[in-house]
Every structure is written in C-alpha cells, then in structure tokens.
Length: 282
Length: 292
Image (tube, rainbow over all chains, first blue to last red; front, side):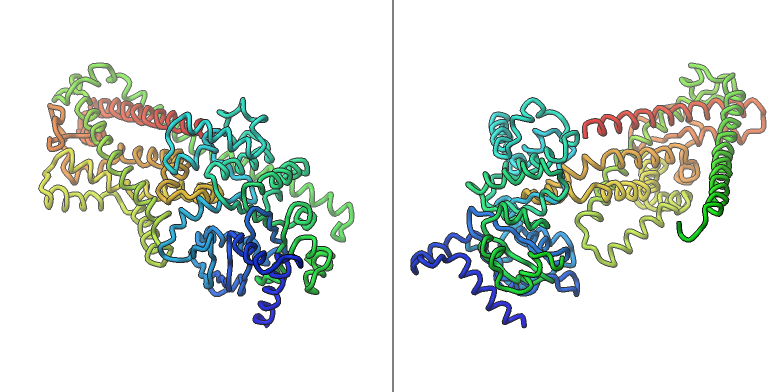
C-alpha cells in the first residue's frame, strides 16, 4: 500500500513541477531549483510512527503549503526540516533530507548551521521577554556580530523586511511582550529574517491572530518569497489556496498528494484529497 | 437544567454559598494561628532583648559579664559564613540544575539522581554536620575553621538550591527556548541568553530561602567546631570563628537570668540581618523582573 502510494506521489511531483511545454533541459533546471529534497522519510515518536515514507521536493523561492487534518504529521514534518523535532528525545528518523544537496541527518552536519539557513516562525508568537531591538538582534548576536552600527542596520532591514518598521521604529526599546499578537508575530518573522536564512518554515503562523493581522502576515509571505523559500503549515485551506504556489496534503503521516496549488484544489487526483478539500472530513 | 427543577437548584445554591463562607472563615483562622504565634515571638524577643540592645552590644566581643557582652564576633562570623556559603552553593547548585535540566540524558539514572537530591534536602542538618566533621575538619585537615564551617553549611543548603534552580529552569517556557534554538543558537548560548535571565528571579528566591535557613542553623556548626567565646574576628579562611546562633545558644544555656536577655538581644540582631538579606534579594529580584 505504501509502495503504491509512493509511486503515485512521485508521479504527482513530476506532474506538478514540469509544465507540458518544458523540454528535458527544463525539467533538469527545475530539479536543480529544489532547495530541499526529502526522500523516504520515516519518523517515530518512541514506538508510534508519525511519518511514513514521505518524499517531497521543495522548490526554491516559492511558497509551499502543507495542509491536512490535526495530527496528520504536518507540523512534525515541518520541524524535521530544521531538525527541531529532535528536541523531543524519543524521536527516531530514517530516510534522507537534503538541503542544497547536503544530507542534514549526516553526523558531520551541524544542526546549529542548518537552523541559521532554515529559519522558523512558530504557531504562537514567541518573542523573548526583551526589547524589540534585542529580539531582532538576538540571531546576529549569537552568530558573533557585536558592532552597534552593524546590528542597527540588521534590525532596521529585518523589521522593514517583516513590514513592521514603520509601526515600531519609535518603539524599539519597548518590551516585545507589550505588542499586540499580530505585531509580535511580525517581530518574530523579523527576528527570523535577521539571521539571513534561505528557507523560512512557518508553523500555522496565523492561527493565533485576528483576521486583520492574518491578512498582514499573508501579504508579507507574498513579499518574502521574492527572496526566501517558504514552507507554511496551515489549518486553513483558503489560506493555502490564497498564498501558496504548491500544496502538499498530508493524512495520517503520509504525503497523499503534492502539486501546484491550483491543480490540487481544482483537480485533486486522490479521492482523499478531494474529500478533505471539499470539507467531507477534517 | 440537568433535569432538576428550579426549586432544587435554589436549595442547593444556598448550601454551596454557605460552604464557601465556612471555608473562608476556616482558612482565615488557619492564617491567624500562624500570625498569633509570630506576634507572640516578636513580643517576647523584643521585651526581653531590647534592653540589652545597643550599639555597644553590636560592637562588643563576648564578655564574662552580661552588661559588657556583645554579638560582634558572631555577627561578623555569620556574615563571613554566609558569603562562603552563598558563593559555593549557588555556583555549584545552579550548575547542577543546568546540567540535570538541559544536558543530562532523560533516563532512569538522571531521574534517580533527581529524586535523591530532593531527599537530601530533607536530611537533618546534624547529619551534614557529621559529614563536614569527617571530610572538612579531619580529612582535609581544615580543623575548626571558618572554611570548614562554610563548606559544611554550603553542602547543607546545596540540595535546596539545586531543587529551586531546577524548578526555575524548568519553568522557562519551551516556546522561547525553541525560538533560540530555531535561530541556530547552541545549547550554551540559549542557556546563557534566554534560560538563565528568565530563571534568575526563581533561582534567587530559592537561594534566599536556603541562606535564611543556613544563617539560623546551629547544630552542624556545633559539630564542626564553631567557637563559643572568641575575642578576635576571623582573619583568614583558616581562622577560628563563631556565628550568631552559636553565641545565642551558648547564652541561653547559662543559669543567670540576665543572659537570657542578652540572648534575646542576639535574636533581634539575627532577625534584623535576616530581614536585610531578604530585602536585598527582593530588590535584586525585582530589578531582574523589570528588565525582563
């Protein structure tokens, strides 16, 4: 059953990324543009398997959405991409994840390095109990930048990148806990940008926000994909449809379907995908 | 509602409100019991000791006559002891807590160590006195000196500090730790920049409680040989010393009534030092909390 699924999924991936008119060279080029390549990923929490044979290539500088019902493994999958999932001590994995053709599970590969390249924004805004400035400067500081002028520049650039500079430029020394939830989340995004990552993982970044803040974050995601590859887990199918270029549907720890977002929503190939996006379950 | 009629609900409501009121009175009484005894203690100590309390009393060494006796040696001895205890026990205790909470593998052995540290916190202080006598006084050959007393007291309160620091470290929200790791911070960077700053108020509270216990401890100091009559201040870690509780204990043991009053004055000084220590710690704690 798994094997069949796998074949099907891989086919989908090809269908999704290669447009009909693209020649062989085009397909190769497309392949080279994958920033993360996951193959045959299995993951266990102790004896409970949470991910089954997931294979998926994440394209560079696009927004990839991951949807699925609660407990389908989508957050687990996301956290595997920067090895944050290993903070749970009983986690075991098999298979391969390559970031820019480098195996991240290899012993030589430092997870600290991976996480500077693959940044993360969490479900609940989680600023440090420090000033806005210190929050954004945290990443550069841990990587050894001490000069005030350099830090000032990074903080400004990052806050501008997260579209919150104008709101906060006069409040840089205020404690980030005093900001609204939406502002906190964008400060967290700015904080992630300050490390200058390649990839930004977002774990349901708007689930704790009101509709207006959500719209702002969604708008921001559209701007960020000019420079960054974004993988976003979302509960909200409309959100996935609105902001993503590609969508992956997870169910019970399996990747059921992965395709261009328009294709997946308008023309799902798998019955279960169809049932989920038409609201028949989940 | 739940198949009950309006009348039943009203009847039950009265009972529920009444129980709440009765319990409120009982809890209030429990608080009053503690308060009454505290007031009695203060009253007794103040009325007995205040007559002997003066600047001379604070600055005098012990003397054969009650009128000339003072607590200077004990006061300074206690302060020196507390400095040694605070430095040794906080450094070792916080390091232990960090190791157990953040670095140690989560297995049965770690859990075993954790449970045993908690048990150690309940071991009678006299046992720690015997430990200090065996190791510091005899084995390390420190003799009846300040350092032997300080290290013994440090061991005595170490478990309390470890447990308090563990609680403080554990209560740092996982979200902000994840935020730090998510940006590529190493474990130590996360500990130094996120966990410890957030845990410091809790650690300090634990340290204060532990030090307050240590400053009033008498039994282990008797065993490791704090002197009772001493006419000089300790000039080095290897000097003889005394401490306030030892001095007070010694005075209360004398038959003449006047010495009871001298002891009472000593207790007032001890309580005052305790109050000052706690106030300083609260100030430090508030400062850190505001910065967070």
